[in-house]
Amino acid sequence: MLKYITDSKEIQAYMLKGFFVDWPNHPDEDTHLRLLESSYRIVLALDVPAERVAGFITAISDGVLSAYIPLLEVLPEYRNQGIGSELIRRMMVELEGIYMIDLMCDPELQPYYSKQRLHPATGMIHRNYAAQTGAVKNQ
Image (tube, rainbow, N blue to C red; front, side, top):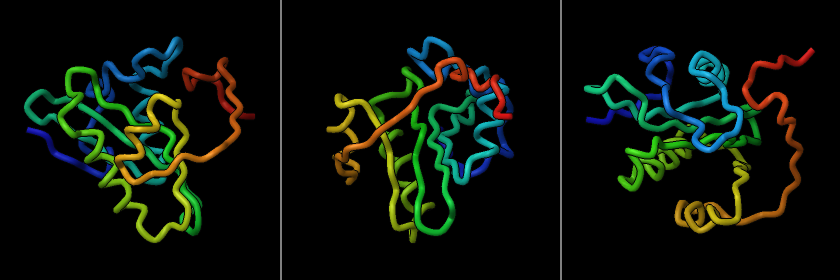
């Protein structure tokens, strides 16, 4: 049974095991929990009987005009069940009233996000892979 929640009060770090699939250097579960707690908005798909998070989406925002969705992930064993679509749908409700909601993705994921009523756009990025685990703090 999945339960969708919009805060991290019901979860602990051990419930976040297995995320950041295919990342060469990924945040550990404690860092993952910290990033959820620090996000402007989150939606979690919680598998209650298994006591684990099956999927999550985060947003950062100024709370006025703009928001960015940096992370959406569903654990491999929970994919193709509509969880990602539901996480996006619920996040869009959370961000209702925000003028611009941006999300960057790889080209092969654009068809998926197009089905979620997002539109392709051109953007620029910078990546500091030394900080990919979340262990490096800004000074």
